[in-house]
Length: 323
Image (cartoon, rainbow, N blue to C red; front, side, top):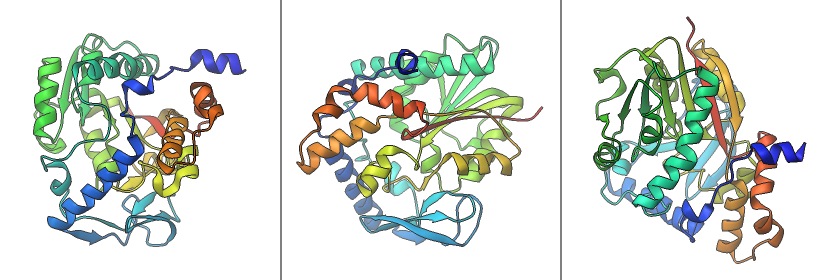
C-alpha cells in the first residue's frame, strides 16, 4: 500500500515555491491586509451563511480580530466580517503574496510541477482535450495556461489584477480578459478552471453559477480551494495561512457536495493535496519550538500519506454540468 502511495505522489521542492520565512511573511501579509481595509472602506458584518443563507452557526476560531464560524446546515466556515470593498485588497499596489519572487525560474517550476499536473488530471477525467475550449478564472501570471495551451484547442484567461493580466499575456501570448464573468465575450467553454479563487469571493454560490452559465452542457468546472478539515488547519488553527485574511470562506468536502447539489452539478472528481507538513515545519521555525527532525526528513512521504487519506489542506473538485 505505502509503495503505491509514494509512487503516485508528486513530490514538491518547497525551496522553489516558498520563501524561507513563509509563516512570518504570511502573518505580516494578513496584518497589512487588515490595515488596508481599515484605511479604505472598512468592514461589513456577515450574519448569514454565504453559501446556503442559514443563520445558525457556531464559533470555530478567531484570528487577528476576525471571527470564523461554522454553518450548522452546510458545513461551510466563513468570516463574520469582510471588507466592504474587496478592491481595498486586490487593487492596492502593495498587494503581494508571501511566496517566492515571481521570476522566470519560479514561473517555470510552477508551470512544470503544478501546471502539467493539473492538465494531466483534466485529461484523465475529461478525456481528449485537443478539441476543447478552456477558460482559467483568476489565472495569475499564467503558469497553468502556459502548460495547458498545447493540449487544448483554445485557451482563454481572466484576472481582475492589471499586473497579473500583463504578466499572463506576456508569459503565454493568450487572450486575458478583465471583465466580470457575466460580461466576457467568450462563451460555451468545455472546461473552466478556478484555482484558489473560490475562497476569495463574497458570494461563492453566485460565482459558481456564473461560471456554469459559461459552460456547455456536459462541461467541466475544476476548482481548487483550501480544505478546512485538513491536518495543517487542525494543528495550526489561527496560525494557518489558509485561515483569515482575504480568505472569506473555507470549504470542506461536505460543503462542496452541498454546493454541487444546490446547482444540480455532478461531482466526477474530488481529492485533497497539500503542503501540510511543510506548513507545520514552518510554524515550528516561526514559534522557535524547534523543527521536528522526523517531519523534516520524511516530509514528502508523510504528505503523501495525508493526501491519500484525503486530509490535506487543498481540496480539488471537478463538477460536471448536466447534459
